[in-house]
Length: 67
Image (cartoon, rainbow, N blue to C red; front, top):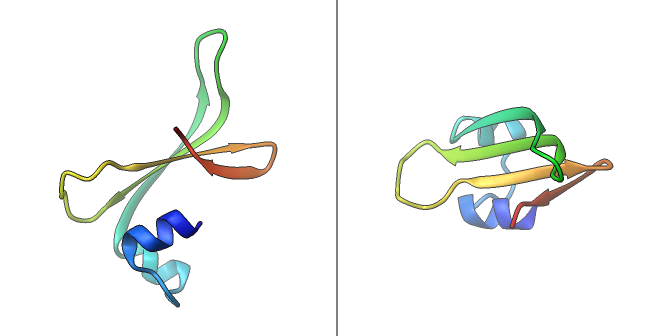
């Protein structure tokens, strides 16, 4: 995703190289009704800078940034 690449300054890094500079978790999420059901990914850099984590949602096969 362009927003993730820009935030970490990624240009030609492989997924393995990116994994060395970020922590990530995946949740099979189901919120209260009405709400979101699906995969949620949270990405946090390996340094706590005060910047917010990225929250990504996958819905119908499309990965997007959460608002």
